Length: 285
Ligand code: GUN
Image (cartoon, rainbow, N blue to C red; front, side, top):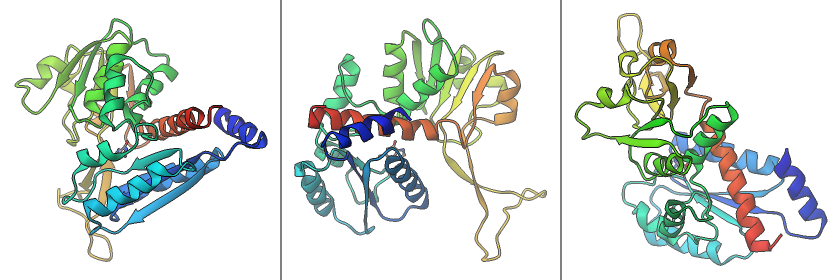
């Protein structure tokens, strides 16, 4: 792997190991899974990686104090705060408290603004992962009509900027769009990051669409009678599904990315790319 080779060389030349800090507040199982994967992959390419797991009842001030310590630590090169944070916390204030120089997720307004202006900055992880996935699959972006479902700061909004940068004609749909299907049927490239299982049905896409599913929805597994299934402990059985009704959309799509397995691994790859880019800037290598 390219990044691993580069890191090995820098360390052999006497530079410090890149150090990524992954912060998580509370033990949301999905967050633990994502943070665990990022940590493993960072170590695999030769980074030092630290998971800082704070209790659910951590106060905003306590989290900001930990961030200030990592911001000031010259041995830390990248900081990620896993979302969602517990309800009592202010995510925007947290985003603004990560040093822009260590902001591996591109959450800080300065970096978001730089991306909007086309200036060098850490790339927003999931949106850049989607662009990389499309590029790696040989999908032409220039001049194509891209429709983004969702306008979150995490995915939808920055994704539109990256698609625009690549010369797509970009349209956003969201919860107040009156007839989403009328818009999505025009899409050459349809990307759903709305977070609603089954939102996109087969009749909402045109023949040959390129469909990217960014939804991560945990839904009940139903039995043949349509009732929720339970495990031996009496807990409902859940499964991870995207926003697309996969079989219906796949029938018309020229290319489709599934959930799980599509965008997720590409997001992690972008976090690693960003970690190395931040390290290079801080260490001057
Ligand atoms: N939660 C879901 N996706 C992400 C992500 O890309 N970064 C962070 N920090 N939290 C997330």
